[in-house]
Image (cartoon, rainbow over all chains, first blue to last red; front, top):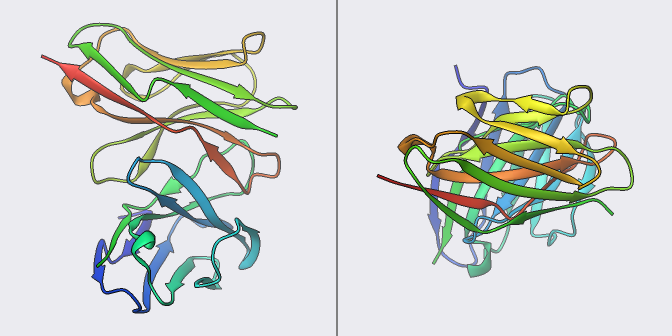
Amino acid sequence: DTAVSQTPKYLVTQMGNDKSIKCEQNLGHDTMYWYKQDSKKFLKIMFSYNNKELIINETVPNRFSPKSPDKAHLNLHINSLELGDSAVYFCASSTGSPNTEAFFGQGTRLTVV
Amino acid sequence: AQSVTQLGSHVSVSEGALVLLRCNYSSSVPPYLFWYVQYPNQGLQLLLKYTTGATLVKGINGFEAEFKKSETSFHLTKPSAHMSDAAEYFCAVILTGGFKTIFGAGTRLFVKA
């Protein structure tokens, strides 16, 4: 019974294409996130949503557009993919309280060729 | 601004030896501190956290960490390393408000037989 699930796990696509990654959590959390992990394992927050509202947008190119249809889902759509977008993207959720941890999905490895 | 510094991108220990992974934070307010572990091709999972109260925090898999305010440190230790401990470890701090977790650059732990 996966708490935070994201699909697909692997995504290989050509430059210029548009792709989406889906994320769902069944923990009843109010807050969801997208993180990008580069090849050196560095984790950087991209977006944070609370109760379907965008709270944090960390100067991510506007080719990246998150969408939260409800509190349990946060999808990430990427337009005009570039080589530099290749990374592992993690979805996560939490209660939004500062003393509670985030729960992470398994990640989506995006490779742009 | 709050930040997290992990000293040593790679740490190698022998099986049965002490594990010490270093983390220092900078924060203008009392922080909430976390250690996460990432096994290959997986998402992050929580090892332990410090919010308030006892400064020595015990986590899963025999790990513990001590919050030292005077040293602004939150080092992770384990008395005896197992081969299964080989993974990437991340120290993290949550910014006030709970909507943004800042991760350190990560420390890769190698365990030699």
